[in-house]
Image (cartoon, rainbow, N blue to C red; front, side, top):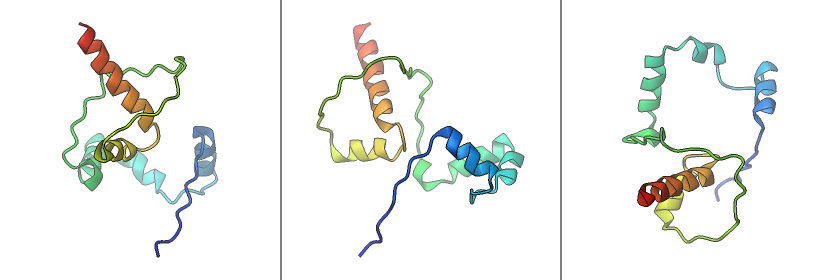
Length: 106
């Protein structure tokens, strides 16, 4: 039986405080010392990022917009793709739909 996973959410301020207290397992000094090329190479070698070429430059985040709760049916692989993007996956789905809508309106 797979062990139970505990998912915990932290705010940016909480994460910063944890790092300052030394509660992070990440070697932040090593991360800060990395060049942009080294960071890009590390990301490129991540199997989760393999072959991913997504241009988010045109996606627009609308934090002040009130969202309407709803139920939507998505293919399992589509939902898994966005969930694997991490926190904010619903916002990314909304951004993709908005970009499509704005393109279709032109």
